[in-house]
Length: 471
Image (cartoon, rainbow, N blue to C red):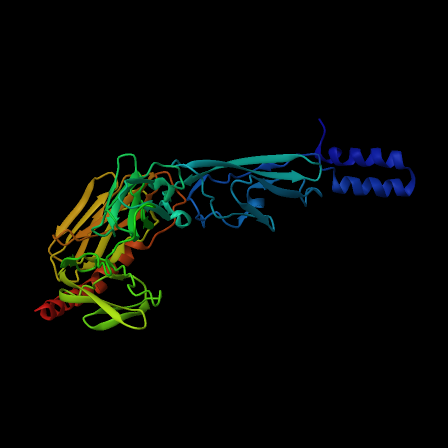
């Protein structure tokens, strides 16, 4: 049986005999001390798999010391070997600096599914022998709202002719999901607008009507994300028709009734009978207060929530020699204003250990002092809690482990006014030993005890002032 002493001495003797003389003895001594790096590296610990949301960073996967993950039997003081580290996957950004591994910001992927990226980390010794370790990174999909294409937001149509426009040219979905559309408004009484089942907008202008119309549409994807945008429609006269003989065409002609917060566009079309000048200047007034000087034939007014009552919108058109006036009587109805969510806990993207009883808390106010109803639910429709009669809602709940939850808070005033806020929450599985300690529950209790009563008093005072001012 060969002893450990013999294993070290035998190479020394062989090198000494081959070298000869004192130099050979010295070389043999050094070789016996250093030893040949003939053992491969190995992994002594595992880099854990992890998950991260698109375009986000997992802060726990930074500055990972790779000498805590890999080792080699021939490293000093046992030998003179060394290790070099590399990471290979261009899909997920990762860097190695000073033998420490850091994962960067997760990329975004097309489609609506989560993506799993496999990353390999390699340790290589001086002889080229390697040790490999792979980990799976789950990139969690985040729904992206449709995009508004401003470059294609204007079209031309002919008066007294039905025209169609594909709304998929106005909005696109970055994930390739099919979109649905609704018409929000903006057209005058001389233009009929609707959205057909094939997602095309249908325009029916009136006879002899030429103008610019600013229309608003909204696009929805299957997960509820939405985006609104404008479509500029120019209505041109039929080529064979003569221009209108009217010297002044205010549109609309009758008295108008709108709600607070709604936008209304006024238009005039003028023909200079004497043809002494072709330049017209427009000045627009609301209740005899000038709002637009040297403007254009179009004027948009959006009454605020303090403008209920009777108003007069007037325009004066001048050619430098004379002028003409047109006016509209406007009745602005008082409109309900939705509630406002002031605070909502827990914060978005909070993670909790397995079995945690999560405390949910929110405060809201209503601009008109209406009684509020809080409804907490999951994205699949499961109701978590419903509370009415106050400005604060709080409860606790244990959510299922090992998944992300989307908790939706809806605050309604009973008059079709609704405020919504969504919260992404992750609950780790029961075997997740690396879950970070989250001080949320203590913060939420302190918040409920100190801040919520103050916000409730402020909301009541604000509501009483609003009621008193309305009276």
